[in-house]
Amino acid sequence: MKKVYKTRLIIAIVVLLLAILGIYGVFYSVKFFDIQILPLVQRVIVDFSILALSLLIGIIILTVLFGRIYCSTICPLGIIQELMSILFFGKKRKNKYIKSYPIKYFILAISLGILFGGSATFIRYIEPYSYFGSALTFSIVGIIALLGIIILTFFKNRFFCTNICPAGTILGLISKFSRNKIYIEKDKCISCGNCENKCPAGCIDSKNKKVNNETCIKCLKCIEICPKDSIKYGKELKEQIKFSIQRRKIIISTAVLAVFGSMIKTGIIIKDKIAEKYRDVILPPGAESEERLINTCYNCNLCVENCPTKIISKANNEFPTIHIDYKNGNCEKECNKCSQVCPTGAIKRLSIEEKQKTRIAMAMIKKENCIECGLCKTSCPYGAIIIAEDGTSINAEKCIGCGACKKACNTDAIEIYAVKKQSII
Image (cartoon, rainbow, N blue to C red; front, side):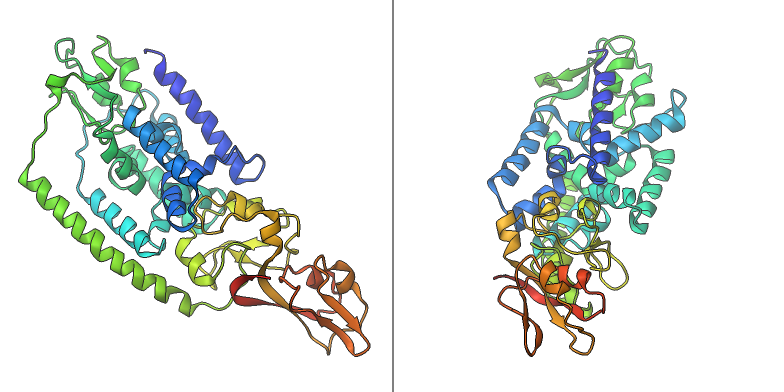
């Protein structure tokens, strides 16, 4: 067990590298982003599949068996914080035991309440995977958030993971009942404080010889540095497990449930109202409608980076989530990459055949600019352009709004218009 920390750290670094390669589309690592917990929770809700549910159950089982190993080995933002901590402090840093603050339960209640009400507009700005993706794709919000978390790491190490992150709070609650925990054998412990000083999560109280397994991220560093081998990872002894109902916990639990219930109603209101103030934009196939995309997209920008023709744009002042801009090209007929990489279900997973039948926009010909050159007809992969004696026209029954004709046109005679809701032709 003395080498388990280094082994776990090496695995975490490999996972981080795979995540970075996946974000930039160099190597999409075996659906790696499908196991990011909050995006996965949402995908089960909005784009249900047996695979998504199985992955979610798998993460829950992993946590029940091993505790919050997810936070130290699978979460890219968590791994970045660990590496920053090592880089900043090396062996010099001394940590102290950090209380578990109730505020994290209210953050979780707000996040999940609004999400279950139908909108991801709050969770988008606090979820670790979103921060990671948007920061690596140079979005302002993501960069600011990542810098803020790194600064927080400087002062409080993994405080974001243990007392703010909603994903961490979910896993922490499950970890309280995990089979394998970090615990201290009191008869061996000499209270040297090494474990507390080096614990990045601040979950070890060396004075009282206790470990808070709810906030423990299972980095396993304490096992490596304990001089008396008194810190164990496994099934905790029965005599050490105590269960008590405290009035304070009942009050907090009741308040959290009340907030969760009120936030569901808030989420329903947001879902119905948020899309009204934005102009019509063209969305990737599978997004269905502006209202749905705004309420489900995390702005991780994975689809932006993985789009081969780079027509998917990031959120901006005109539209709060990703959308299509045909200035750079067109939507390729044989490509469904965006729907395959989306981990949240914001873009539904479409087969190539389904994607080719999904109308995302409509092309219109501006007669005053058209010189009847026929380039649009030869470039249209769906055979939707008709050239007749009275001029060029669009067959509305075949056009899906892919933008190939607009790309081919040299006289700006074609305009692509968004549809209110995507449909199957």
